[in-house]
Length: 73
Image (tube, rainbow, N blue to C red):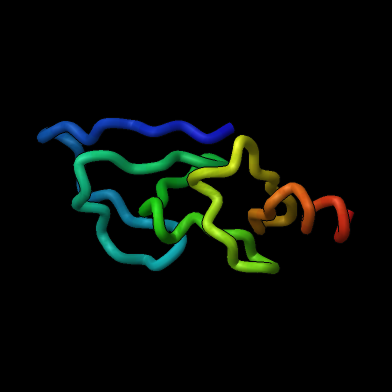
């Protein structure tokens, strides 16, 4: 499940799981229990951006698009 969350002023520094940098954007993505910049949320195989996909898949610490998840299952 992919959630878009608003960042409030009281939040502690939030670190992106993709790049390791602080998330300073007003909104961030929450996927697989971790926070991401929208551009950093990518398939670990084909590197397509996942923020516009209707679903994403997580396995063994990696995030996949549907096509690559099906291929590597």
